[in-house]
Image (cartoon, rainbow, N blue to C red; front, side, top):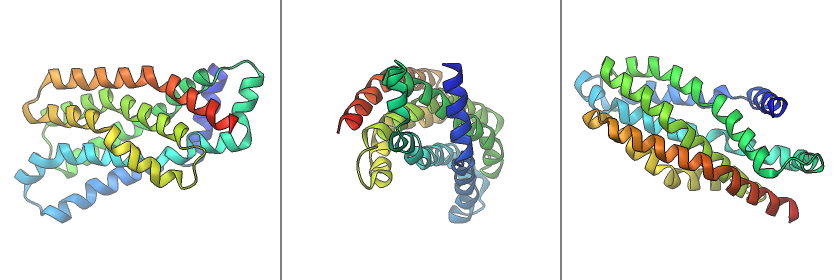
Length: 212
């Protein structure tokens, strides 16, 4: 498991794990130009902007999560070694989160400064991303597995991820409106449920893709 996780992290970092972070920062930089420099408006909308940017950034890695290894027969080799697809997907999920979420969480610090968020809002943004990004990663890995054998899967994956990730977005961003700890807890619970479901859903999708 440790060697699989190391390999997955190394491969995901090699193919450009920083691209979602750069996209996330670009959205935070462009938004003040769109709505104007009013600090009150930026402070009121900045938290939601960060969440939407995180959701959109999570779409970018979808095409490289499963499809390249499926085409190279890596999952077939795992199967020959007695490694279940569910285990491979669970390890890939952990690697995806580790190469995606920590960079976004760190990048949210300069993004919060650009969007004029105060310290309390920033704390809720950081806690929300910590609770919600596992759910975004789990949704992404499931969609990547389901669409891995379909032509045009990157566009389809983006279309599928946005609605499926809405519960995480609603409770994660919604917690900022009233500094609601209960909303953060619900966001974390949704993420946990998605992380529990993802290995089985992704494993079933991989079995189907390998059998087709």
